[in-house]
Image (cartoon, rainbow, N blue to C red; front, side, top):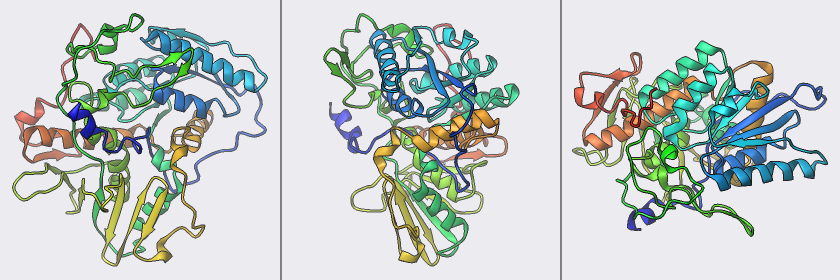
Length: 433
C-alpha cells in the first residue's frame, strides 16, 4: 500500500470536481411552471454521483427518473436515496435503475444525463448520449484520451446538445475574482502561474481480491485490457447498516485506469491556470516533465512565452493556484484566497466553503439553467476538452521522460511519432469509439 499512501497525501482535500466564470452564473428557478421540468438520468452511481444527486435533487424543476451502474448495491442505494429525497419534500419518486446505461438513453422521458463513471467510460457514454439527443453534465476530465476528447466535442456540436463539464471551481466566487484580477492586470502583467495538482499515475500494483457477486467486472473494465479486481477501485458500501464510501475510488491513481493527480486535480487547477492565461480555447505548445535537464516541476509552455508549473506555492503544498505578476501576486484554493496586497482581495472579505463542492449547488444549477435556456453553461465542452488535453499531455511528457511539442491549432503533436502512439489507447474487448 506504499503507492496508495503516497497518492493519498491530500486525501482530506481530494474532493470531487471544479470550474467557474466571471459572468453571472444562474437564472432564477423561482416561479417557473412546474411543467418546465428537467428529467435526469444518472450514469455511474458511485461517490461523486451521490454528491451531484444531493445538489441536483434540491433544484426546483428537476426530477430524477433513472440511473445506471454495473454494481448492484450502488443501484439499490441510488433508488433509496432518490426516494428519500422525494419523501423529505412530501413527494413520491418513480425511479428505475439499470445495469446497462443504454437503457437510460433509450428512455424518451429522460432529458439529460449526468455521467459520473470512471474516466475510461466517459467518451463512449457521452457520444451515445449526444446521438440520443440528451443534454449532458459530465465529470472531469471529460475523457481518457486526447482523441476521445475531440470526438466528444464534435458529437456535442453535431447534435446541438448542452454539455457541461464538472469543473466546479469556475463557479466559485474566489476563483472568479482571482482570474478577474489577472485579466485586469491589477497586479501588473502576468509573468508565471503555479498550479499545483500533485503527481502523475503509478503502475497498477494492488493485490488481487475477490470480485463482489453483484459487480459486473467485465463491463466495468469495458474497453480496458484486463486487470484483476481490488476493492480500492470500488470502495465498499453497505445499505443496512448504511455505510458510504470512506475514500475515493483508486482507479484514478493508476495509469491503466486513470490519469493520476495530473488529470484528477489537473482538470481543476490547470483549468483555472489556463483560464487566467487566456488559453481556454488553446493550450500549451510545449510540455516539459520534471527531472528533464534542469526542469524541477512539470512545466507547460505557451505561445506567448508564459509558463504554468505544477509547483507548490506554500509549505503545505496546497492544491491551488498562484498567479504571479510584475507588481504582486494572488493565490486561490478551495475556501481561501490571498494576495500580496489586501486591496486585491474580494471586497466582501469572505471565503467560499470548500465543503460546498460536493453538493456543487451553483455549478449544477448553472447546468440546469443552460438546459432550460439552451445556452452554453459556464464550462462548455470546448473548455473541458482543452483542459483535458493539457492534463493528458502532462502525463505523456512524464511517460516519455522528455519534452513534447504540441500544436493547439491542429490539436496534434509536432514531428513526434513516439508521442503520437499515446494520442489514444486502443480499445479492447470489441469496443469501438
